[in-house]
Length: 135
Image 1 (cartoon, rainbow, N blue to C red):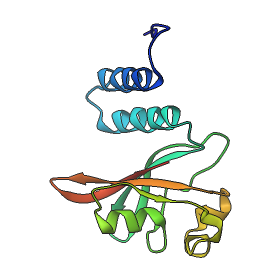
Image 2 (image 1 turned 180 degrees about the vertical axis):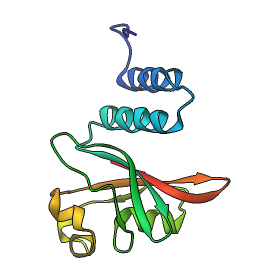
Image 3 (image 1 turned 45 degrees about the horizontal axis):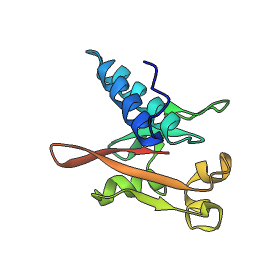
Image 4 (image 1 turned 180 degrees about the horizontal axis):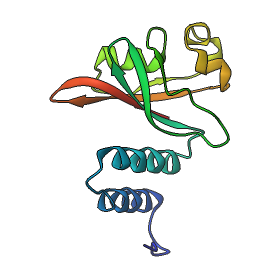
């Protein structure tokens, strides 16, 4: 879908998001992967990850991290995404200067991937937080 030249950037982003939704099929995992990739592209993110909390572990079910290897699961405690899920916030959590935050010590991904800023949102099912989408 080619955007007209006179569209504002937000209109182009909205059209791209709509295009993503229109490509959804019957496989929810594939739909989540499509949405994660679209979020990364639209927000010009270094990375994007959808994590789901299963028991005491975080499982990375979809991610977009060019040239990087992601561990698919592990203990949730200490990870920013875990705190987002636990809080069940209605608004995104945005943290700047991650290297000088407590997460530089508690979340191994902050140092491993040299993350600087985190923006994440709890994902809910029947009003209960089950995961997080972060960029």
